[in-house]
Amino acid sequence: MKTALFASAAVIALAAFGPTAAFAQSRDTIQIAGSSTVLPFASIVAEEFSAAFPEFKTPVVGSGGTGGGLKQFCEGVGDNTIDVANASRPIKDSEREVCVTNGVTDIREIQFGFDGIVFASAAAGADFALTPVQIYKAIAAKVYVDGALVDNPYKTWNEIDASLPNQPISLAIPASNHGTREVFQEKVVTAGFKAAGHPEGLSEDEVKALETTFRQDVVIEISGDYTETLARLNSDKNTVGVFGLSFYEQNTDTLKVATIDGVVPSKESVADGKYPVSRPLFFYVKGQHIGVIPGIEEYVQFFLSEGVSGEGGALEAAGLIPQPVEKTAEVLASFEAGAAK
Image 1 (cartoon, one colour):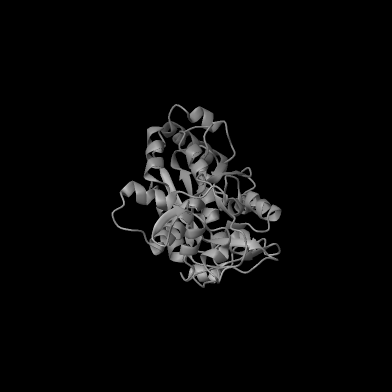
Image 2 (tube, rainbow, N blue to C red):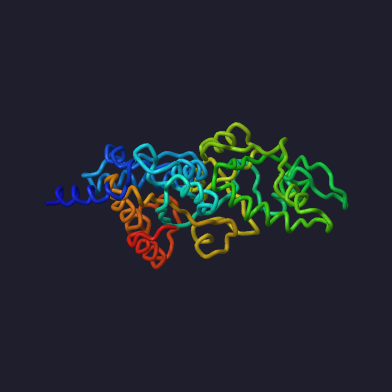
C-alpha cells in the first residue's frame, strides 16, 4: 500500500514538474550544496536521516559557500540541479530573480537556528579584545590619520589601540562567495566604519570605497571552507581568522577566541542577543522537486524535529544555537503549506 501511494504521488508530481520531470525521476538521492557554516549540521542530519528512514538514500551534502550553493539551486528544475541550498544568510532578491528566470518558482525558506561569527587566533598566542572600529582600522585600505586620508599605515595591532597585542596585523576573512562575508561586512566592517567616522562632503561612491576596499598586504580572502582558514592560522601564528562559532567550539584545542565589544561569543551570548555578530541559518528547498526526488519532505520535517535541531538535540551538541520552538513550528507550517519565499 505504501509503495502504491508513493507511486501515485510521484505520478501527480511528475505532471506538475514539467518537461524535465523524467530526468528528476531518474535520481533518487537528495542533492544539497552551499554554506560551509551549515555544512557540518546538514552532514549530521543526512546521516541520521538515513538511519531513521532506511527507505531513502543518504542525502549528498556538498559545500561551495552560500552564494555558490544558491547559484546551483537557481540553475533550473530537473535531475541535473540540486534540491536544497544551505545558506548562512537570506536569499537575495537578485538570486531569487535568477531562480524565477530559470523556472525555479517554488522556493521554500527554512530557518533552523543561529550561529555566531567569531575572531580566533592561535591558542598559545596573545589575547584579543576587539571592537568593530579596531577591526575596520586594521583592514581598511585607507584611513584618516590626524584628519588626512592616507594609505593604511598600521603594521601591528597595538598601533591601532595600545590595549591590543604588539603583533603584526594579519586577518583571514571569508571571500565573497560565503554568506559569512556578508554578515562580517554588515555587522563588523560597516559598524566599524560608522564608528570611525569620515568627513562630510564625500560622494556616495567615495564613502562606499572607504567602507569596502580592504588592504592587500594583511587581508587574506579565503574562498574555501573554515578548514582552509584554520590551515592558514596553523601556518602563520600571527593570523586572526573569521570562523563560525560552531567551528571554533570544535577546535578549542588550537584556537583562542576574541571578545567583541567586551562580550565573549558563546551559545548563551548569541541566544540572548548580547554578542553583536550573530546570524540565523537557513536552507532553501526547491518545491518543484518535492514528490519527484524521494524524501525531501521527510528530510525537512526530520531536520526541524526537536531531537535534531531543538533544545538538547543532535545539532545543539554540534554547536547550533536552537531557535525558539514557536519559530520552528511557524517555519514547518509554512513549508508544509507550500508557502514559497
